[in-house]
Length: 172
Image (cartoon, rainbow, N blue to C red; front, side):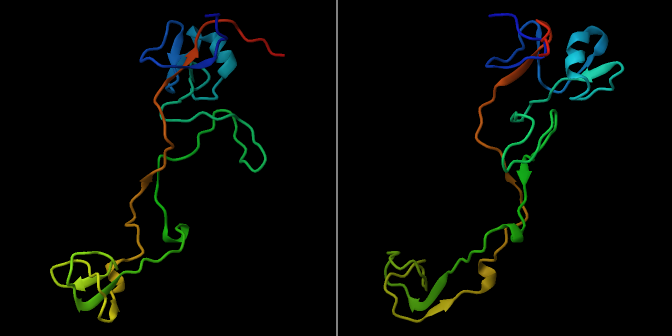
């Protein structure tokens, strides 16, 4: 493997950072021991800029390129975004209804052909002979219960590491 650029980030499939690399976990490093890397990163990812600076934090994150594109929101280097869980309000949910009907007639068979609730020990009635009766609106309210749902895309856990030593990248 050729020598990396200082500050280069790579993905590794093992559970340790190789020699000369560190996990991108947002940790603070002393400037005095990492002057070359500090001159590249500055305080973009944290630190006070006098004694410490931060490494990027890619734990539980999906990296994205800074800048913007057609129809996209502008992002700057080091900017965090997104949330792990989202709670939708009724105004954010598409309008929809759930209709459920029941019958006053007795259900005479366990077949669920008509998928209608009926009076008896059977839960479904296959032969609808009586009049259908709408159930109370409270039986199927249009509420989500206020719980959040996970908002993560499908993923595979891999380790992002940043090169602490290597070739200093020249600016062109």
